[in-house]
Length: 406
Image (tube, rainbow, N blue to C red; front, side, top):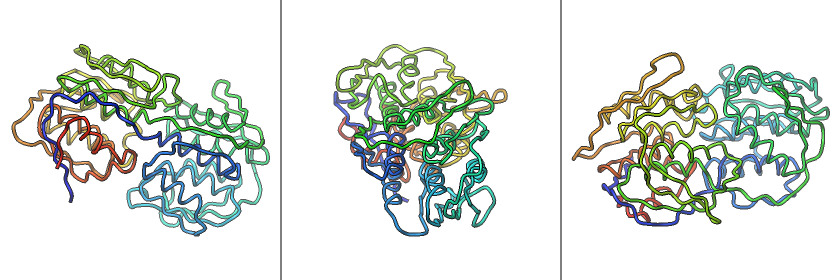
C-alpha cells in the first residue's frame, strides 16, 4: 500500500490556497441541470472523484452504472433514475453495498417507482425500471437519517406530475444540507414552501440558468486544523463566502474556540492564530463531516471536548467512530461515549520523535483530518490517494505551505 510521509513543519508559509469547489453543491447542481435537459451552465464544478463520477454517469448510456464509493452519487442517481424512462442498475464498491439505502427506496416505491434489490434487501446494487405513473404525492420520511435521502426526493419533486409534500419525522439531521438543496433548486427557478416539518414542492419546470459553485467549506476545515496546530500561520482560503449555502461554514465558529480567527475578505477568508479554550462542547448534527477534524485538533491541543450528533458517522465511507477510536489511541487520546449519544475526547498526547503512522480506512476525511498533526511531529498517511474523493490537490497544496512530503 502506498504511503505519504510528511516532515514535521511547525511554521507555515503565508500563502493563498485555491480550495476545490464544493462537492455537495456541484452534485446538486448537476442533477438539477440534468432535470432541465442540461440546458443550463454550471461553472467551477468540483474536481473531486465523486463529482466526476456523477458527471460521467449522467452522460452514460450504459444500463449498469457504477458509482464506486460515492454515497451522494448513489442516492441522488437512485431518485433521478427512478423517474426516468430507462431501466438502470446502480452498483458500487463492496463498502457501498454495505451502506443502507432502504429508506430512500421505500419512499420512491410509494411514489410509484419500480426498484428491486439485486442482492441484499435494503442495500445496493439496485435495479430501477422505467417510471410509469405517480401513485402518491405525499410522503413521511425520518429526518434523523441521511439528509441526502431527503435531498434526493426534493430534487425530483418538481418533475413529478403531482409534485410532492414531504413530511420530516422526528429530529432533522444535517438541516443545512436540505436547505442547500432547496437553495440550488430556487436558483433554477423552482418555488417551494417549508413550514414546520412539511416541505411542499408543486409540479413545475426547472428553468435553465448559469450557476457558479462555491469553494468547499469541508475542504477548508483541514486548513483550520493546520493553523490551529501550527506555531506560526497565516493562510488565506480563496473562493469562500460569508453567505455560504454550506452548513460546514460553522467551522468558523468552532475553530474560533480552538485557536483560529477568521476574517472574511472580498476573495476569501483569512485564518490567523488566537488563544484557544480549555474545554468545548459541539453538536455535529448539522455538520458531521467536521467531527474528525475537530476531534484531532482537540486531542493534539489537550482540549477536553464533548461531541454530540455523531450518529451518521457509522454509515459513512467507513465506520468513522471506530476509525477515530483506533487512530486517536495512537495519540494517547481516548474517544469514548460517556452517555448515550455524547462522546468525549480526552488526551495525554505528547509529540513523539518517531514517525506517527495514520491509517485511513479508505476514508478521505480520515487522511485529511489527521494530516495537520505534521505541525507537531513527523507523520505518515497510508493510502494517500483517498483524498481524490473530495480534494485531489490536497497533498500538493500542503507542499505549497512549506510542508515537505515524500
